[in-house]
Image 1 (tube, rainbow, N blue to C red):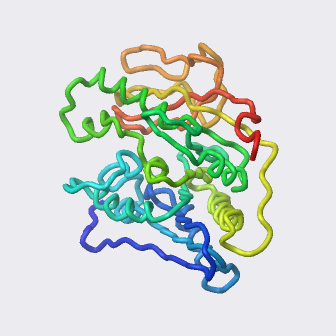
Image 2 (cartoon, rainbow, N blue to C red):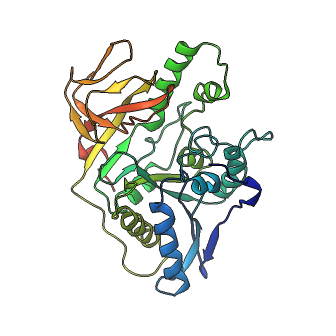
Length: 331
């Protein structure tokens, strides 16, 4: 679909309370075919305008549509995936670069980000977490307690971490496979910053951030999951009056550990995998176009299986189960 980009514009809506408090930003439609975020955010805006909710302290900024080109097309991306290689640039090469030049400074002016997404695969809602506190070179962080305390109060019962570490493995393999990248897509996919999206960028600016996968794209429950999470976040952070939500106690905790790229259009899954399907070591996950078998390397779960993945991009992830006590022993 051809869209006149000159007709597009960026929009955010901010509410400020009388008292000092945290600065929360909520984003939707980073991917244009994920409509639960805009629907949830617009519902919260309606509640605020009707005074059913009131921001009593701090500020709450809402971005219903972060990527207006992808949203207008009804597709995941405008020119490319906004939630990869996200950073301001002096020389925009595509529409998502223009989005980054607007969105990144906006994120940096806030303390907390809640980014609403949905998945192609049919699976329940889950929350993507950041790293443990660390001083490492990949993603140094000092907001673990604050971030995970919020995560446990969003209303979902499944949590996943290990995102950027796993991406780094994928980038290393792509570099070895591709060598000297020729196309812009290959350049981006072999960029050491590959995998840095909204939440990762927010953490580089000193804030904490959560990606909430609200469910499958077309699941009518997904916008409700997003709405509940926003309302809970506002209450937990003290932006709205009323009782604070209690943390969930019965939940599942996983860590991403492996990513596998699709290399050819004829690479095919062995079955119609869904997110969080269990796999046992040695199970056949898919077959390459040349007949090479792709088998599970360990007992675990398959995440983000994408049968429509373009060659050279992520095809699926594998995750290991973690003891729930490792997520929240203190929060």
